[in-house]
Image 1: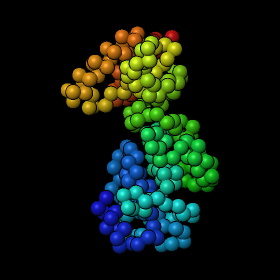
Image 2: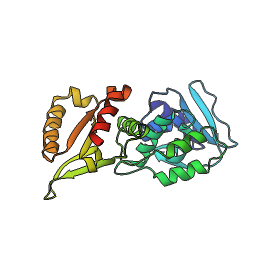
Image 3: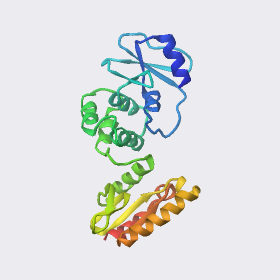
Amino acid sequence: MSRCRAYASHRGTDFAFSHTTAALLYGIPLPRVDPTIHVSVRAPGRAPTIDGFAGHKLGRWEIRMVADLPVTTPEQTWLDLAQLLQRDALVAAGDYLVGGSEPLTNRLVLAHAAAAAAGRRGVARAREAIELVRAGAESPGETRLRLLLHAAGLPSPLLNHELRTAEGVFVARVDFAFVAKRVALEYEGDIHRVDQATWRKDLRRRERVEDLRWRMVRVTADDIAAPAELIRRLRRLLA
Protein backbone atom coordinates (compact mmCIF):
# COMPACT_ATOMS: atom_id res chain seq x y z
CA MET A 1 0.00 0.00 0.00
CA SER A 2 2.82 2.42 0.84
CA ARG A 3 4.47 1.80 -2.55
CA CYS A 4 1.15 2.47 -4.26
CA ARG A 5 0.68 5.73 -2.37
CA ALA A 6 4.22 6.84 -3.16
CA TYR A 7 3.69 6.16 -6.86
CA ALA A 8 0.29 7.89 -6.87
CA SER A 9 1.74 11.04 -5.31
CA HIS A 10 4.34 11.18 -8.08
CA ARG A 11 2.27 10.13 -11.10
CA GLY A 12 -0.84 12.25 -10.88
CA THR A 13 -4.25 11.11 -12.16
CA ASP A 14 -3.66 9.52 -15.58
CA PHE A 15 -3.33 5.93 -14.36
CA ALA A 16 -5.01 3.17 -12.35
CA PHE A 17 -3.63 0.27 -10.35
CA SER A 18 -4.63 -2.97 -12.05
CA HIS A 19 -4.21 -6.75 -12.21
CA THR A 20 -3.05 -8.30 -8.90
CA THR A 21 -2.37 -4.87 -7.37
CA ALA A 22 -6.01 -3.89 -7.91
CA ALA A 23 -7.07 -7.30 -6.59
CA LEU A 24 -5.18 -6.72 -3.34
CA LEU A 25 -6.72 -3.26 -2.95
CA TYR A 26 -10.20 -4.73 -3.41
CA GLY A 27 -9.41 -7.60 -1.03
CA ILE A 28 -9.78 -10.27 -3.71
CA PRO A 29 -8.16 -13.52 -2.51
CA LEU A 30 -5.14 -14.59 -4.54
CA PRO A 31 -3.26 -17.90 -4.44
CA ARG A 32 0.07 -16.12 -3.98
CA VAL A 33 1.45 -12.66 -3.31
CA ASP A 34 2.64 -10.74 -6.37
CA PRO A 35 5.17 -8.11 -5.28
CA THR A 36 4.98 -6.37 -8.68
CA ILE A 37 2.98 -3.14 -8.75
CA HIS A 38 0.71 -3.25 -11.81
CA VAL A 39 -0.24 0.09 -13.35
CA SER A 40 -2.53 0.66 -16.33
CA VAL A 41 -2.73 3.86 -18.36
CA ARG A 42 -5.21 5.03 -20.93
CA ALA A 43 -4.05 4.10 -24.44
CA PRO A 44 -1.99 5.52 -26.09
CA GLY A 45 -0.46 6.90 -22.89
CA ARG A 46 2.96 5.89 -21.68
CA ALA A 47 3.00 2.96 -19.26
CA PRO A 48 5.61 3.01 -16.46
CA THR A 49 8.95 1.26 -16.99
CA ILE A 50 10.15 1.43 -13.38
CA ASP A 51 11.88 -1.56 -11.81
CA GLY A 52 9.35 -3.53 -9.74
CA PHE A 53 6.41 -2.16 -11.74
CA ALA A 54 4.51 -3.65 -14.69
CA GLY A 55 2.91 -1.24 -17.12
CA HIS A 56 -0.25 -1.92 -19.15
CA LYS A 57 -2.49 0.03 -21.52
CA LEU A 58 -6.28 0.13 -21.45
CA GLY A 59 -8.54 1.01 -24.35
CA ARG A 60 -11.67 1.41 -22.23
CA TRP A 61 -11.02 3.80 -19.37
CA GLU A 62 -13.10 3.37 -16.22
CA ILE A 63 -11.72 3.55 -12.72
CA ARG A 64 -12.84 3.46 -9.12
CA MET A 65 -11.27 4.98 -6.04
CA VAL A 66 -10.30 2.48 -3.37
CA ALA A 67 -8.64 3.83 -0.22
CA ASP A 68 -8.15 7.09 -2.17
CA LEU A 69 -6.21 5.28 -4.89
CA PRO A 70 -7.33 4.92 -8.55
CA VAL A 71 -8.08 1.29 -9.39
CA THR A 72 -9.48 -0.48 -12.44
CA THR A 73 -13.13 -1.52 -12.08
CA PRO A 74 -13.93 -4.90 -10.49
CA GLU A 75 -14.93 -6.25 -13.92
CA GLN A 76 -11.72 -5.03 -15.61
CA THR A 77 -9.65 -6.33 -12.71
CA TRP A 78 -11.24 -9.77 -13.00
CA LEU A 79 -10.57 -9.87 -16.75
CA ASP A 80 -6.96 -8.85 -16.11
CA LEU A 81 -6.62 -11.63 -13.54
CA ALA A 82 -7.72 -14.11 -16.21
CA GLN A 83 -4.32 -13.54 -17.82
CA LEU A 84 -2.52 -14.55 -14.62
CA LEU A 85 -4.60 -17.07 -12.65
CA GLN A 86 -5.65 -20.63 -13.25
CA ARG A 87 -9.37 -21.31 -13.64
CA ASP A 88 -10.18 -22.28 -10.05
CA ALA A 89 -8.38 -19.24 -8.59
CA LEU A 90 -10.22 -17.05 -11.11
CA VAL A 91 -13.54 -18.55 -10.01
CA ALA A 92 -12.62 -17.82 -6.37
CA ALA A 93 -11.89 -14.21 -7.34
CA GLY A 94 -15.25 -14.00 -9.09
CA ASP A 95 -17.04 -15.53 -6.09
CA TYR A 96 -15.52 -12.84 -3.90
CA LEU A 97 -16.61 -10.03 -6.23
CA VAL A 98 -20.23 -11.18 -6.43
CA GLY A 99 -20.54 -12.33 -2.81
CA GLY A 100 -20.84 -10.79 0.61
CA SER A 101 -23.37 -8.33 1.97
CA GLU A 102 -22.11 -5.59 -0.37
CA PRO A 103 -21.06 -7.22 -3.66
CA LEU A 104 -18.62 -5.30 -5.82
CA THR A 105 -20.38 -6.49 -8.98
CA ASN A 106 -22.68 -9.30 -10.08
CA ARG A 107 -22.32 -12.39 -12.22
CA LEU A 108 -24.33 -10.95 -15.11
CA VAL A 109 -22.04 -7.92 -15.38
CA LEU A 110 -18.93 -10.12 -15.22
CA ALA A 111 -20.39 -12.37 -17.93
CA HIS A 112 -21.11 -9.36 -20.13
CA ALA A 113 -17.56 -8.09 -19.65
CA ALA A 114 -16.14 -11.48 -20.61
CA ALA A 115 -18.40 -11.69 -23.66
CA ALA A 116 -17.29 -8.23 -24.81
CA ALA A 117 -13.58 -8.94 -24.39
CA ALA A 118 -13.01 -10.77 -27.68
CA GLY A 119 -9.36 -11.12 -28.59
CA ARG A 120 -7.99 -10.38 -25.12
CA ARG A 121 -5.43 -12.71 -23.61
CA GLY A 122 -7.13 -14.88 -21.00
CA VAL A 123 -10.66 -14.30 -22.30
CA ALA A 124 -11.25 -18.00 -22.97
CA ARG A 125 -10.40 -18.76 -19.34
CA ALA A 126 -12.66 -15.94 -18.17
CA ARG A 127 -15.57 -17.28 -20.21
CA GLU A 128 -15.02 -20.77 -18.78
CA ALA A 129 -14.72 -19.46 -15.22
CA ILE A 130 -17.82 -17.25 -15.32
CA GLU A 131 -19.99 -20.32 -15.80
CA LEU A 132 -18.80 -21.52 -12.37
CA VAL A 133 -18.93 -18.24 -10.42
CA ARG A 134 -21.63 -18.18 -7.76
CA ALA A 135 -22.69 -15.80 -5.01
CA GLY A 136 -22.44 -17.42 -1.59
CA ALA A 137 -18.96 -18.90 -1.26
CA GLU A 138 -17.21 -16.94 1.47
CA SER A 139 -13.62 -18.15 1.12
CA PRO A 140 -11.33 -19.67 -1.52
CA GLY A 141 -11.59 -22.96 0.37
CA GLU A 142 -15.36 -22.98 -0.02
CA THR A 143 -14.96 -22.24 -3.72
CA ARG A 144 -12.49 -25.10 -4.15
CA LEU A 145 -14.87 -27.45 -2.35
CA ARG A 146 -17.78 -26.36 -4.53
CA LEU A 147 -15.74 -26.91 -7.69
CA LEU A 148 -14.67 -30.32 -6.40
CA LEU A 149 -18.32 -31.34 -5.91
CA HIS A 150 -19.13 -30.07 -9.40
CA ALA A 151 -16.24 -31.98 -11.00
CA ALA A 152 -17.32 -35.17 -9.22
CA GLY A 153 -20.80 -34.87 -10.70
CA LEU A 154 -22.51 -34.55 -7.32
CA PRO A 155 -25.77 -32.59 -6.97
CA SER A 156 -25.43 -28.82 -6.60
CA PRO A 157 -25.87 -27.82 -2.94
CA LEU A 158 -27.48 -24.66 -1.64
CA LEU A 159 -24.90 -22.17 -0.36
CA ASN A 160 -25.09 -20.56 3.07
CA HIS A 161 -28.37 -22.25 3.83
CA GLU A 162 -30.16 -21.44 7.08
CA LEU A 163 -31.38 -24.32 9.22
CA ARG A 164 -34.36 -23.65 11.46
CA THR A 165 -36.55 -25.59 13.85
CA ALA A 166 -40.11 -26.56 12.95
CA GLU A 167 -41.17 -23.38 14.78
CA GLY A 168 -38.89 -21.25 12.59
CA VAL A 169 -36.19 -20.62 15.18
CA PHE A 170 -32.76 -20.10 13.61
CA VAL A 171 -30.24 -22.82 14.45
CA ALA A 172 -27.30 -22.42 12.07
CA ARG A 173 -26.20 -21.27 8.66
CA VAL A 174 -24.25 -24.00 6.90
CA ASP A 175 -21.78 -23.57 4.03
CA PHE A 176 -23.39 -26.23 1.80
CA ALA A 177 -26.75 -27.92 2.18
CA PHE A 178 -28.17 -30.95 0.35
CA VAL A 179 -31.67 -30.32 1.60
CA ALA A 180 -33.37 -33.43 0.20
CA LYS A 181 -30.86 -35.67 2.00
CA ARG A 182 -30.46 -33.45 5.08
CA VAL A 183 -26.69 -33.37 4.66
CA ALA A 184 -24.66 -30.26 5.47
CA LEU A 185 -21.02 -29.56 4.59
CA GLU A 186 -18.81 -27.13 6.47
CA TYR A 187 -15.41 -26.03 5.23
CA GLU A 188 -13.09 -25.72 8.23
CA GLY A 189 -10.12 -23.38 7.98
CA ASP A 190 -7.24 -23.49 10.43
CA ILE A 191 -8.95 -21.15 12.89
CA HIS A 192 -11.51 -23.89 13.57
CA ARG A 193 -8.62 -26.11 14.70
CA VAL A 194 -6.29 -23.78 16.60
CA ASP A 195 -8.73 -21.36 18.28
CA GLN A 196 -10.29 -23.04 21.32
CA ALA A 197 -13.30 -20.71 21.49
CA THR A 198 -14.09 -21.39 17.82
CA TRP A 199 -13.61 -25.13 18.35
CA ARG A 200 -16.02 -25.20 21.31
CA LYS A 201 -18.55 -23.10 19.39
CA ASP A 202 -18.31 -25.54 16.46
CA LEU A 203 -19.01 -28.49 18.75
CA ARG A 204 -22.17 -26.91 20.18
CA ARG A 205 -23.29 -25.84 16.70
CA ARG A 206 -22.82 -29.32 15.30
CA GLU A 207 -24.90 -30.82 18.10
CA ARG A 208 -27.73 -28.37 17.40
CA VAL A 209 -27.63 -29.22 13.69
CA GLU A 210 -27.69 -32.94 14.38
CA ASP A 211 -30.62 -32.43 16.76
CA LEU A 212 -32.54 -31.40 13.62
CA ARG A 213 -31.64 -34.83 12.16
CA TRP A 214 -29.15 -33.35 9.72
CA ARG A 215 -25.81 -34.98 9.04
CA MET A 216 -22.88 -32.57 9.38
CA VAL A 217 -19.74 -33.29 7.33
CA ARG A 218 -16.69 -31.18 8.16
CA VAL A 219 -14.19 -30.69 5.33
CA THR A 220 -10.59 -29.47 5.57
CA ALA A 221 -7.94 -28.46 3.05
CA ASP A 222 -6.50 -31.97 3.33
CA ASP A 223 -9.81 -33.44 2.12
CA ILE A 224 -9.71 -31.18 -0.92
CA ALA A 225 -6.07 -32.01 -1.67
CA ALA A 226 -6.83 -35.76 -1.59
CA PRO A 227 -10.60 -35.94 -2.13
CA ALA A 228 -11.22 -39.61 -3.00
CA GLU A 229 -12.47 -40.62 0.46
CA LEU A 230 -14.61 -37.47 0.84
CA ILE A 231 -16.27 -38.05 -2.54
CA ARG A 232 -16.96 -41.71 -1.71
CA ARG A 233 -18.50 -40.70 1.59
CA LEU A 234 -20.69 -38.03 0.00
CA ARG A 235 -21.88 -40.38 -2.72
CA ARG A 236 -22.94 -42.78 0.01
CA LEU A 237 -24.73 -40.11 2.05
CA LEU A 238 -26.50 -38.64 -0.98
CA ALA A 239 -27.55 -41.95 -2.55
